Image (cartoon, rainbow, N blue to C red; front, side, top):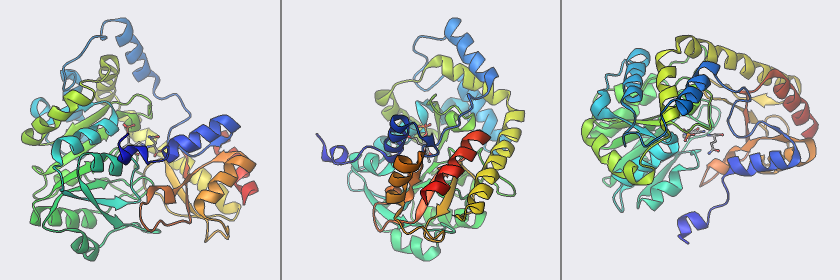
Length: 381
Ligand code: PMP
Ligand code: GLN
């Protein structure tokens, strides 16, 4: 087997969800809601299954979904995307990222990646022949600086991969950081692959700004989105790739041989959802913000030190600052086995010099799930 994949452990998300299933634990690890998701959209999918949409759709996606995606980003982010030449539907953001890496990276290209890193990036980049260069972010602010970018960019840099809002950090990068990264991309003639799957899950005063909207970035950004995150339907795996026509054309060359297409019934339902979900996009973050605060306040009452979260489903606990004398992975295994609560040790998302004191907890859960999680984490410490 190819060692790039064969030498990897099972992803931490599956490892922890597997333990949670096996042990009947409360699962605050892998990021998914325990609510079933918007009923009207699920009804549209059911209707589409029963009424026709079940054969291969067009390779780049149903026109109605590509139009809806362009309309959504025009309304919410001021992006003007031509649905016919700049939007490709993929089987989740994961396939979107794989298509981008396989389509664009040439052997030996340097690819800048920030760690903690969403765990699919590095193996896929390496399998595509790329040479990752890691930029290490750390709590509590998880931000990069000009000096860090100066050290990372070289004459061989061809791509930078940015996840914003950042999973697992829960940070929504401010405008000035994005402007700085854009400045480097333009100066070094680099293409940004921007994983913005959490763009709708942003709280309070924080504002998500797409990297594509910064000066010089429109033609050199591949933007990745996911309906799974937009609608809390994480198992649906309907994703989007947005890029200028030349890039989109190249991306489709990889997409056509990875999955070729995505279930048309789900595409139809997502198209309907994007055009009819103004209230959902307003109310969903507010409900999640309440859940974030319930989990955060409950944990603080139990003596845990909680880091701020501006976006995503995730809140981080600083174990060391909480007086827990265990590395994150040891604590996560201890907590799931002895107290029945699953979490994600953030060290699993670093490749080099891991930060080992941060535990990621998912708060997109019902109150009773959060309360049980708090009680069990308190028992584990
Ligand atoms: N990127 C990031 C940062 C994510 O958090 C996730 C899902 N948790 C994905 C990509 C994958 O999204 P999808 O399920 O649409 O493949
Ligand atoms: N993105 C989800 C998370 O961060 C996990 C998705 C997966 O398990 N691949 O929890």
